[in-house]
Amino acid sequence: MCSINDMGAGVARETKNLTRLPSGIFQVEFNLPADINALTGMRTWRKSTKTRDPKEAARIRDEIMVGWRQEIERLRNPSVEERLEKLIRVPSDWPGTQQEFIRDLVAAPGDDDGPPSLAALLRNYVGIVRGMHGAAQVMHELAGVPFKGSAWKEFFAQAEQLIVLADAGDSLVSKLMVVPAAQKAEHDPNKSVPITVALTTWKKNEHPTKATASAYEVMVRRFVEANGDLSVSEISRQHVRLFRDKVEEQVRSAGTVKNMLSKLSALLNWAWKEGYRDDIKPVKGVQPTKNANAPKKKRPFNADDINRVHGYLAKAYKPEDDRYWLFTAALLSGLRAEELCTLRTCDVREEFGVWCFDINRENGKFVKNDASVRLVPVHKQLIDLGFLKHHARTSSTGRLFPTLQPDNDGRYSGYWLNQINHVFHKSLGFGSDKSFHSTRHAFQDQLRNAEVELTVRDRLFGHTEGFGLDEGRRKRAATSYGDGHYIAVLNEGLQKVAYPGVDWSVLSERTGQQEL
Image (tube, rainbow, N blue to C red):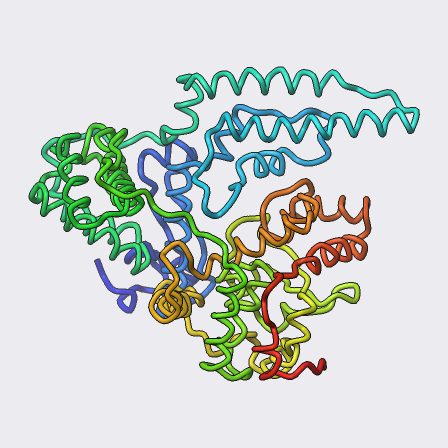
């Protein structure tokens, strides 16, 4: 195969998925695997680079190939939302789209909770829909308009049946929710490879982040220590148990053991799809033993904890330092660490007279889910401490915290979290049940103690609630309340966060209390 530089302008000749057309423009071509061909009905994907420059074409090709590999992975492992769309149809009177309905149905309930069962999700959502049904009926009666309740009744009947099926572990539901939709490659015993080779091939094909690749390398190393470098086709449940026991000898956390088992399961699942194994079951059902300690749930900071942290910050940093503000800003907003650390100065702005943090996906920022895209008012206490002065001071840089640098995974919170959690545990003596994430737990507790209404708490916290945060339902919220009024409602709820017993003067003495 010739190089790009050897290609004649009038002949389409390929190199590494790149073809030069008679026009001189380069085109990316990729022959699809058999399972993706069966799913899409296409044999080849093609996309123009719109350039005649071979080096630029190669760069564009690499970007396109990354996107195609992600699409292939999505097709092979359809999301829960995509599978649920095959099972559920919304009632005709539902005030939103099918996609919105499904997205709300599977939204994660909280950071520290594991994924709930399908039955629990359905029960929760049916309860919400029943409330909406009652409200809709009342509104129709008040307006003197006939209420068409038949579709709602049909929906509830179908939902109850689905809950029963989910509770019983019905095979149809199980298959739709668990088994990959794509066909796997035929297993060839002669094709199987040692687990270390499988890991190398997986990294080459899947392009994981450095942190993810490193975690899988640790997992495979421990597996080899327990069982040797077995062929992936030989790995049985007994080998998995030996691996689990080996991990438990080295770590005491059940959470770490589960994480290792999960990674082994994912690697064997990949090997199954590639035809290296004829099943994916050896890890299923293997759990940490009683020898492993259950992971501690994170606890909120109390007033004494907060005063100690503020004392440390006042001594360690000046108000001009980014790190001076991160803890207190999180404490008074409930923002996740990455949401806070990636804020741009334009993301702090006035909305209907209220200063807000605008949490969005612009400029490639990481956002956990759709409900996390939101506006969060800036707490008056934070403004009194001089936070808007910091905002003005960094406005020319474009980033609210410009000195924070991304880690190997591109997370701007990574290095800061390592540093501040080390301070918490080593310098301030907090236990492992408290970390920077405890600011969110403290914020949630304060909202709850102030009896802030649930949907307002959910919106501030970035959890799915009645309206959601996609554009369609934001418009419906504006219709019902008006955007300005709704921001005012959020602000009223947030300003109730008080933290009794916290001495803010430790910080205010350094920053002054002048507002811009």
